Length: 302
Image 1 (cartoon, rainbow, N blue to C red):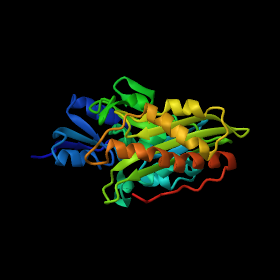
Image 2 (cartoon, rainbow, N blue to C red; image 1 turned 45 degrees about the vertical axis):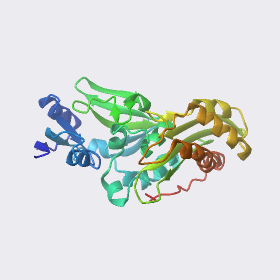
Image 3 (cartoon, rainbow, N blue to C red; image 1 turned 60 degrees about the horizontal axis):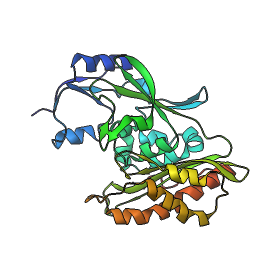
Image 4 (spheres, rainbow, N blue to C red; image 1 turned 135 degrees about the vertical axis):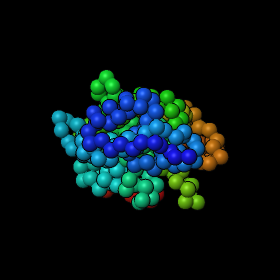
């Protein structure tokens, strides 16, 4: 059985939305295809009337800084993100998280928009976007609108996007300013299966030696990417020290909903990983915020 009947390669976002509308719910967007094509081949996603290949739309393949934001096209590949000097300096955790997704062949074609649209709570790129308070621009029949990243998630693998009528066009986030830094760390299965057991993205703002604000994103720790709000509140106004880490871990666990997964790890094992993940990511983000020195870590480990 063919996976699709018709194949379209629009050159603009408007053409892509028109292509979707023409098939009235029977077409799907194709970006990198590293998730969609496998799911269709394995029978987890039904064949469609048409595939709309958006890889030729130049608008969604740019990385730039404008009007106080960093703008990243949804069609930008993970490899392009890891090679971006702008993102390395001003959105470091995103570079680190995209640099460990899959292997080189996957990173060369898989896109940041696809990572978010797939709606998995363990999505590496997604966790950094949540920690960086990013927004996504969504195009559909009614035009375009900016939405907070965490508003795009309904449940594991369930997006708030209408995949047969809408598409993500780009993301925007505030670049790191003086006193701000970020980091991403994850622990994955050692057998070479590209499934993260747990990932952690951190953004921090340090003012006069005190933590003014923090954002901590964890996954999978619930049906959606988790913001560890209690840990963020606990850290506010404190001078960071490693002695704080056990208490921060307890605050993260108060928000997290860890479960046992036959493909990843037990809930008990994941619980034990919270502290070492924090110990790797949080001090690194604080050091970057206070020194301004950035050297991404872990790139290409996937």
